[in-house]
Length: 396
Image 1 (cartoon, rainbow, N blue to C red):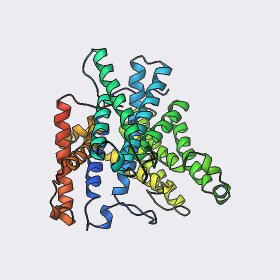
Image 2 (spheres, helix red, strand yellow; image 1 turned 90 degrees about the vertical axis):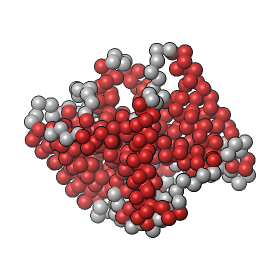
Image 3 (cartoon, rainbow, N blue to C red; image 1 turned 30 degrees about the vertical axis):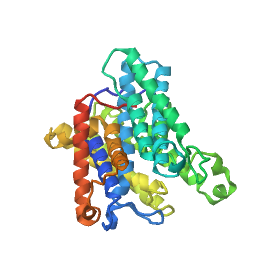
Image 4 (cartoon, rainbow, N blue to C red; image 1 turned 60 degrees about the horizontal axis):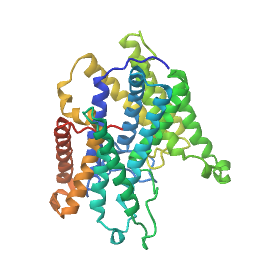
């Protein structure tokens, strides 16, 4: 494995915090009426993207930037090959489980045939998630295993309590994997490629090309009409994996593969990487649209180029110039991203359960709605900060 120092890079934390903060903002903004088109996701039929369409790929990219450091930390702790693979598999499984439960809570359920309201079902799910993935600050193994076991038991009960379909005969289904589930598949694919090529920059670049080629091949008319694609993983997973791999490449440029190079040289490589991504996206756009819904290569490559460019600036400001004071409000989202991400859902289900609507009607449309979305996002960061101070931290 290509050596990379296991360290905490402030600019990566800042990028993660910015991305989570923006995710919370755009998720709240999605429920606001009468806002400009550029503030919402574009439909599947559109050829283009808004800044909203770039948030999810930005998070996939930052997942990739963190992978080399995470793997190196585990190796330095003495993890064997099998322990490392177990961690990767369990992390992937955790993301898939979280994604599927969240998706089934969004729709497809038959509440009248469930023993508890969907709001209570969802709150119990988040309680189980916290029990299972909480970072326990204790050496008491018995207590840790008891809490985690209780979480698993709650999940099993909720699984069997769930009823879907008009007749209630359906259980939980994979309608789609959800945001967290898609992250899980992309993380797993990219991590396997990273290990396979032993962190080589050339190998990682080939991995990105391979992901794009997989999409192109499965969309060839002859292949698409043959039905072969129905037996293979979806092309969207490959596109998402290319975003994670691009993040790994950028981390390798700055902290691994160009070790010993000057800042100017590393910045030059990063700029070249962004330019190549943008050129490749432009070429591919002759045949494929820019589409988040379709998870097309031009969309992913353009987004990777944008995030790479943003990180070049952040790295210079934060790590080189030490301009960090403005980033302090992002620290909860940076250090506790999973908890920050699920807090809005927990609050939403709680207020649904007690029957309270905390957002007045005039703040559900137009600029008042946009301002509320921003204020709400800041409130979520504040709650995440308090919970983190109370030692509530989640980690897959």
